[in-house]
Length: 281
Image (cartoon, rainbow, N blue to C red; front, side, top):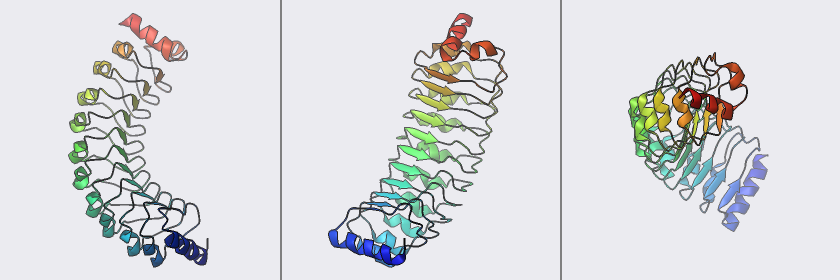
């Protein structure tokens, strides 16, 4: 899309008082200052472009509730992002962000924040201010540790921490009592803290491709679990207590050096594995 075509679209949207504008996948490298004319916009979709920066005028669109900027070339966010205080959803996945400005955490109406597949090495403690977050995606970053403040986000129901460089989980994780889905796949976890098993609303738990050598019997506390991914770890045995997870419909154990249950049982799938463990139990 040429800048002339973009200006025409903006002028038309301004004239009609458009509330939604979708500019996804248009090879845009910049946004013109005229974007400020779109004062009625509540949703702006800019994913799959080539944006390297965001103009100050964008942050005059204070009615925005949804802003999608995934798959661009952003390496930083300007402090003006803090002006978009009506935002409930912000998608910044697949960029090149290396840090987050403190102003981002002034967006206290956010319920969904996607920061996956960036270059974030740390999370600022200010993250605790996003008290309404229910979905947070941090997958695909080089995070090696998590700040305790993250676990003050007690409304979270979904948390994606997959594809990072985590070697341990802090005990504070027990505070996320509303979590139903937790992804920790593709990290370097060698053990799980007992506090993880206090998250009794979990239905999906992804632990694939870590370095786990054992599962604690406390896993039986996760009574609501329906899906448990454990493939690609170093497990030689499963605790028989897994048989108490009566809602479990999918248990993936591929790529573990298991002795109990033996490979011929594992190959027969979830139901047979659970039968075997019940007999053991």
